[in-house]
Amino acid sequence: MPKPAKKRGVRIPWVTDSRGDRYGRSEIDRQPAPRYVTPLKCGGCGTRVSARHGHADDPDSRTSHYFRIDPHTAACRYDLDQRGKQLVDQAPGTVVRKAGQWRLICPPLHHGGTGGQKPVAGGPAHPARTGGAGPRVTSKQAGAAIASARRIVQILNDFDQDPDVAAEFAAVAPNGHRDIPWSEFCRGRADADQLAQALLDGTAAPIPHAVWGPVHHADAAGRNHDNYVVMYQAGNPVHIDGRPVPLRVAVRSNEPDWIGASTRSGKVLGYGYWQLFPADPAKARRQGWIELQLWIKQPWQATRWDTDGTTFTLPEPRATPKPTPTPAPAPERRTPPPAATAPLVPAQATAAEPAGTQSSQPDARAAEPEPILGLECDGPPERQENAAQQPTPASEPAPSDPAALAPPPRPPIAVPPLPPFPPRVPGASERRSRFARWLDSARRSRSS
Image (cartoon, rainbow, N blue to C red):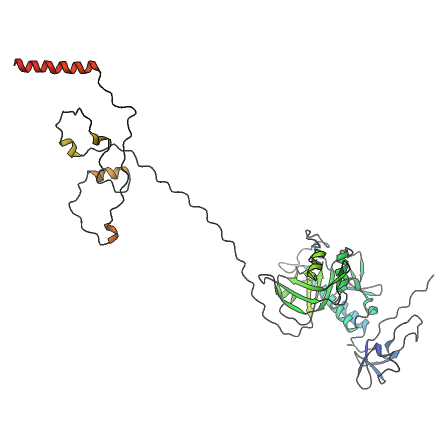
């Protein structure tokens, strides 16, 4: 049975010598001799330390390191045991100590997918609110968990991302049934390309990841400046069909305060289901870049730190032009046909003809009646008849408005419809009887 590997423990990354100069672990093996002057002190608290070359105390040891002689002081950044205990105490329930590791309990998150699928639940349902309109318990716990993830990143940065120190931490997937090595759960600028490459190859674990890095750019984005981005250039490219393609890491949101979009200093960490843009690798290869991006949907998904306090004013979002509605065509106004009225016969025409006489020749003017005065006024037919019976005044005062001098429009005069058949012609018997009556009358006038 093979002998279990001996745990090397955590090594002090930096020391100061008697002159106050600072040295890392690489100085130990410098040839022909290290430049520091003993005694050496811990770079975090000043306690006494010593240096040990590789293979000096363990045949399996291949690296040189510093080790402490006296205990660290209370606030030493290189006392990992003490900082781990502080991590548990600062956010209870977000970090637990188990099997010699500090494990971050990942908060549940809805999974938006990497190809535009509908969101699916990434963990247990949200519990009920705790008292009135207060924030959800999961929101408070999730924010505290992301703050703990940031503190772990800060601890590892203090130890120069030492793999031995990173092995002291792990993450627990939201379902609570899988432990993830910290180096696979949380990526930085130096290894964000590994997560992007796994997404390209389809081998990424279907879990939320934390990605952090130094901010290089922050500003409003989008055609209308209605969303915001904080991003940096990854240290390594991804490979598409064997060709290296530059990778940038972007945290995006519709709310600028959620990602600190008004400052370009410090660092940023985002937690969630990361995606690649564009999703088509061939398009990314043609355009010469690809983006590992995360859209922040909850304010607790992102955190900023080490900012210098300088901010700038973000541009105001441009109003989205609304499409002008096409006006509906106005309904066609149809003038109702004038009411059919019986033709009025002028009084002059009746006076010129003796009463009781009939003309044997039809009057040619009957087929074309003369216009009737007094029918120009608008209104119903009864008003038109009353106007026709009133006498026309001899003279009227001239109107003051020149436009009123123009004659008002005359309404169309009603023309009676033609009879269906021409007038009946008297028969021969009717003509003989009429002639006989006239002859009898002439004879009586002669005899008398």
